[in-house]
Length: 252
Image 1 (cartoon, rainbow, N blue to C red):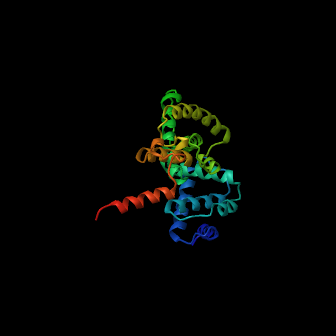
Image 2 (cartoon, rainbow, N blue to C red):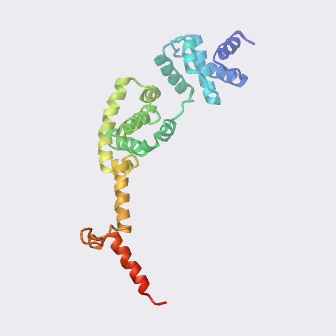
């Protein structure tokens, strides 16, 4: 085993990666990274490169990695680590394209999916001004979901979504302002959309009123004329006496 492979095994064990398959995949990605950057070296330490390659290898194979441990071992900030991971993913050609549907399912906001897709479609058709938009970049889908959730009044982990956008906050806000304009138009023009629920739909009082009106149609209240007038009605004793007398007069 070479000294570099021993370093892979050591760092892998600190990340909780015991699988030989993951270690070898990480080593393969690291070797490919060196080939891809032979003319333009990445200004990060060898340890940081190995940790990121192991992290990406685990992700490709489907083995979970504690991201905080990886950041600590890499010796960089969380923001820099996320950015470096995205850059190396693109260099290696293993970047995952996360769709709006994937994001909505992952964050439990499926109700916002339709509006988010319409926002992005409107942007591409109207605001891109004929330019080629790289929709593979996650910022577009992430921003569409965040804006759609806002208009659908759905709670979502915005910080985690922003982390997945791989872009500076200023650039995100600029795109979000554009998406906001389309969201308002679409949300108003599609009142029957899945995320636009009338307030009374889940209002217990309105449901009771609706049930009450339905019951009145089935069982209408008695007419006032049908009710006996208490001032002119016979007393209970008189009524009882008259009934008994009628019974005595009935012939057998």
